[in-house]
Image (cartoon, rainbow over all chains, first blue to last red; front, side, top):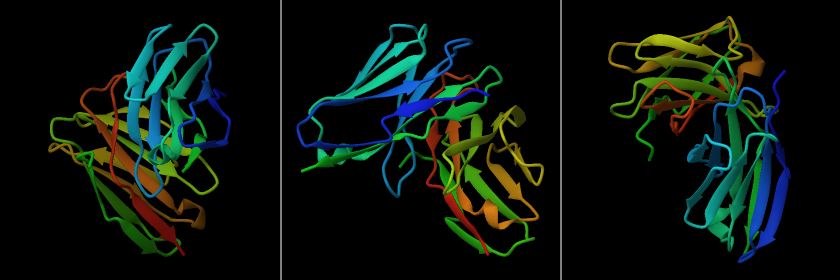
Length: 111
Length: 114
């Protein structure tokens, strides 16, 4: 059974702090890794689609890196703001194109 | 607003009943995905359609079925409903069918089975 794990489960940081979290996935048969941001009472919003080993993508203060050989991706937020408070999900499409989601990292940024 | 619409927003029904959830993808998107978010589970992939054809199937129960129509809207049919089917059901859409496609999520349909 393929497993996608995210850590930590939850995180509280102060406004202005930088933070990062991890998504671990099976390193064999890698196709892509998706990152989503999911605010309470809203729907998931796509952040990045990572495809190549060593990929680094950036969107404002949020960036992500990918290591397909060891099976992990990091999401970084620089200078966290209260509006960054959300659950950050990663999703791994398996060989049969089924999307397996991690349980997410719940981030709370304290003002 | 992602451009993906789902109706209804909320649905309350009884065990044993059948319901239909509807999704309209973003203009130009050919793929539609269905997901289930239960209280005790993370986001679960149910099924993907691309241009009217089933593309990928996840952990979708046999009591559930879906289809995508020629106008590209999709319906998820849930029958013989059980209490455990209470969940938030999301639809997402993307332009293409591949795993590198960015998916745009709709606002979801919250189903409560009593």
